[in-house]
Picture 1 (cartoon, rainbow, N blue to C red):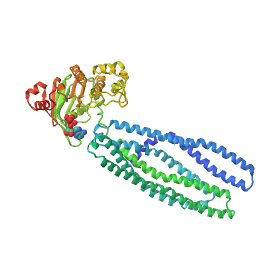
Picture 2: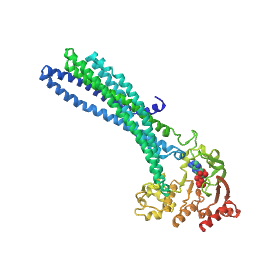
Picture 3: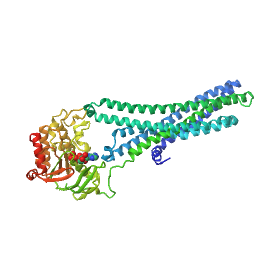
Picture 4: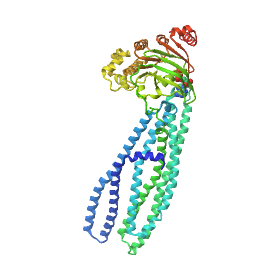
Length: 577
Ligand code: ADP
C-alpha cells in the first residue's frame, strides 16, 4: 500500500462504526449459514430414519432462524451502504472545498471538463472501497469457518476439494492485472470525452462561425470509439472471470460427489453429511468469488484515488497566508506599486517595472490597449497572483504579509461581465454579505443608483432574476453588481467598465456612483469610455506592461504623447464621445 492508498483509506477508516456494525451482522449471518448446513444434515437424517417428530422441530427451527437472519442481513447491507454514502459525501465536500481554495491559475491551465469528470466518474468508484473492506474481512472469515467445518465432517474429502484453490487464486490475480490496466485506459478516455464536450459547449459560437461542426463530430466519434473499445475489452475480461471460477468449482464438486458417493455407498459417511458438505463447499466457492473481486476492486479504487489526489487534492491551494500574516485594519486606501514586474506561468511578461502611488479617495482610470496589462494589475492587487519582483502595498502593508480575507473584504470589485445568480434581486445584492439586512441592501442599491429601477420591477427587491427570471439590461445588471460591491462598504472599489455600450441612463448613473465616491474611497477603473477617463483625478496609461504616462486627461492631452494619440485615434474611429 503506497501513500495515496493510505491517504484514501483514512477516509474509509473514519466510517469504522457503521462498518463494525455491518461486520458483526456478517459474522451472525455466517454462523447461521453454518447452522443451516447442520440442519440440512439433520433433515436428511430424519428422512432416512423416518422420524416425523424431528422433521417438525427442524422445520420450525428453520423459520425461527431465518426470521432472525432477516435483521442481520438488513444490518449487513444497510450499515455498509451507510458507511459508503457517508464516506463519499465527505470526500465530495473535501474535493469541492479544496477546489474553491485553488488559485485562479489552476483553472486556467486545466480543462474544467477533466475536473468535472473526476467528480462525476471517479468519486463513485471509491464507493466500492467500503464493500472491499467487507470482502476483505468477511470473505476470509467465511472461508475459514466453513473450511474448519468440512474438515470436521470429512477431512479426506475436504483435502481433495482444496486441491483447486491455488489454481483459482492464480487465475484471478492474472485477470485482475489486465482489468486494472484497461480500467485505467477507459477512465482516461472518458475524461477526454468530458473535456471535449466542455470545450465544444464553450466554443459553440466559434465552431459554428467556422462551420467546423463535422470536424468536431468526427473528433468526438474517435474518442467515443476509444472509450467503447476499452470498455468492451474490460467487460470481456470481467465476463470471463466468473464462469472460469465457476467451472473450476463445478469440477471440484463433481469430484466430491464421485469420491463422497463412494464413501456413502461404503457406509463411511451419511447422505446427510455429504449434502451438508456440498452445501458448505458451495458457500466457500461463493466467498472465494468475493476474494477474487477484492483484487479487481482494489485496483479500480487505486486508479480513481490516484486521479482524485494527484489532480485535485494535491494541487497547491492558493498561497493563502504566511503564519504571521497581519489582519488588515480598516484601510485608508492608499495603494502603492514599487518596481513591480510580473510574468505569467506561461512565460508572458505582463507587467514591467511598474511604480505608482494612488492616494486614498482618488479616482484613477487605467487606460491602454487590450493586452496592455490592466487586468493583470488588478489581479495582482487582489493577490490572485504574486509579482516576481517589486512590492505592492496598501496603507504601507506589504500585500504578501497580510491576511488574504482581510484584504479582499475591503476591496469591492465590479467585473466587466456581471454574474447574476438565480435568485431575487435582494439575494443577488447580498451575495458577498448574506447577513445583510433589507435596509443595508436598499442603502447599497441607492448608492449604486439602482434603487429606482429595482422599485419598478414586478416584485421590487423580491423579483427573481437569472436564467428563469426577469432579464435585466447590461447596464442594470452592472448597477446590481455595483450595489453588491458597495454593500460591503469597501475602501477600494475596482470597476471594470463594460466594453459594450450601456443604456444612457445606466451610464449616467454609474458615472454618478464614481463621482459620489470621490474622497470617500479609492476608485480604480479599467476605463473604456472617454467620459469616465475625463472625470478621473488621474489617468495611468499602460502600454505593453509598462506605465508610459500618467496625469489628468487635460495634462496628458497637452503633453501630446501616447495618450493623446490613443485619444485622437479613438475619436476618429468612434466619431467622438
Ligand atoms: P488588459 O487587461 O490590458 O487587456 P491583460 O492584463 O489581460 O491586459 O494582459 C496582459 C498580458 O498578459 C497580455 O499579453 C496577455 O496575453 C497576458 N495574459 C493575460 N492573462 C493571462 C493568463 N492567464 N495566462 C497567460 N498570459 C496572460
